[in-house]
Image 1 (spheres, rainbow, N blue to C red):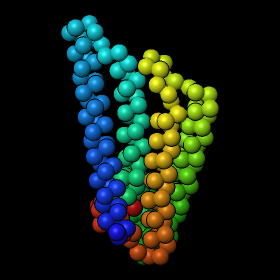
Image 2: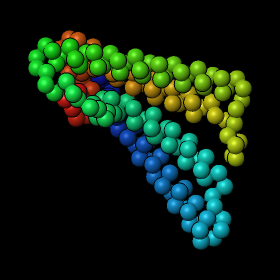
Image 3: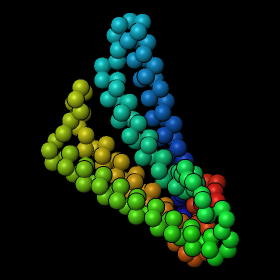
Length: 171
């Protein structure tokens, strides 16, 4: 299986997970609001459920956003650069991004380990917190891999193979 095909499968799987989780968040919120205001019976733990889902959605979007170069950014210099200077700028930006994502993944893993050792649970539903932190850490690590592939491609002066599955921005 080619890296491009593998990325396409991964891309579609993440998008499916995100769509499903967003739909679940919408459903829980709708039922909670209707229950709260019309029936005086909100969904027990609805807020916690939405928090869990939101955490996964945010971190699941990291690899996709990184692959598509769709991060929010302010380009004061990059758009003015041409040729080699633009490539050097892209390498610098990707290097900083990779360091930031490594730190996020590492700190989330540390936090997950702490939550697991101390067996921390959520306030209302009594759900363990460590698994969600581990998922967030893994998704941040996947985003790190994506940005490292982009960094290697930028250093070599070519686009990564994952660009076939997602649109490319100007970086």
